[in-house]
Amino acid sequence: MKTVKLAVIPGDGIGHEVVPGALRILERLAEIDGGLKFEFEHFDYGCDYYLQHGDMMAPDGIERLSQSDAVFLGAVGDAGKVPDHISLWGLLIKIRREFQQEINVRPAKVFEGIGSPLANPKDFDLMVVRENSEGEYSSVGGRMFHEEHEIAIQSSVFSKRATSQAMHYAFDLAASRRKMVTSATKSNGIYHAMPFWDDVFKEISEGYADISTTSEHIDALSASFVTRPERYDVVVASNLFGDILTDIGAAIMGSIGIAPSANLNLNGRYPSMFEPVHGSAPDIVGKGLANPVGQIWTAKMLLDHFGYTELGSMLLRAIEDTFREGIMTSDIGGSSSTDEVTSSILDKLQ
Ligand code: NAD
Ligand code: IPM
Ligand code: MN
Picture 1 (cartoon, rainbow, N blue to C red):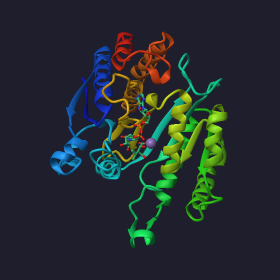
Picture 2 (picture 1 turned 180 degrees about the vertical axis):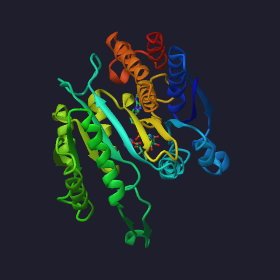
Picture 3 (picture 1 turned 90 degrees about the horizontal axis):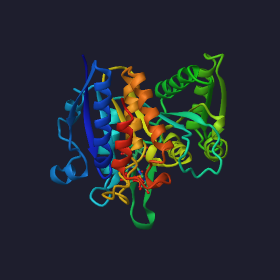
């Protein structure tokens, strides 16, 4: 029997509404497998924890989470209680950095039968590989002076190591898919970092003769994600560009409520973390409206990560069949509740 120890952090807001169902699904799939067992350890880290303890996690939080095989997270953020930059840098971004989760993989694909803002979505199926540890997300800089003289300085950090690692990951992924990599750049406007990004992309691409490449400016690429998403296979992007592109990827599927992600530690020293792309959705919390599919598809990425790809495929089929039957939450045109969608997916697993 193989045991996978999961550190579970529902976090804030709808994280508490979508995580329990995804755990039930993981347990069901483990039963079906027969040789797999999940052990869940729950952590109450989040904004309420902060209000009680003055920090987003316990002083030994990172140490305790590091005992797990993976972290399964809902969402973090409750700006009415804790400023977002404090809560996110104290939990989500802290885990990504402490555990060297330098790659963030985020798929987007067409699902039949769900509402999409695209009138006629073509059959797109793409993966964004987002550099997850540096770039525009840096704490280098500061605020100085006062009142109308106040200025804020924020430096981006692009290392050759992390940039080329993200690109290698993207090329290797493309090799197992349609063999195309698009680089999200902005070397016309960002004077140092993006010409550097382009140089690294060119250098790495020379090692992959059978992969075709394009480089597109992030503004045009964002528009093209909406108008012609079927053109893309693997897209590699810096931290901020990847963040924005993957919300667009989620939107063209139908809703940010269905998009999953994997924050991968590649050196094997620390756990990886699996979380949906969406946040804590304070506007719909407590109403049964939260789409559970982002969290559930995230569970599929976790299964794939541990090599249980057949269970992962079974889960994706159950999601697709549920949508085909019209069982979906209102963000994608249905009228089912969070629990009804989860139950339908569970029922299809056997
Ligand atoms: P959000 O993703 O929480 O919500 C954006 C919109 O999408 C809202 O209208 C929301 O109702 C809707 N939505 C999100 N998830 C949904 C779901 N599962 N089903 C149906 N609708 C859904 O983004 P935001 O409003 O920018 O952020 C809210 C809070 O979450 C902030 O504190 C933010 O910092 C945080 N956040 C956290 C994460 C994370 O933990 N990974 C990601 C994004 C935002
Ligand atoms: C995401 C989120 C986070 C990010 C925020 C909440 C810090 O938007 O995971 O996409 O920007 O990485
Ligand atoms: Mn985001």
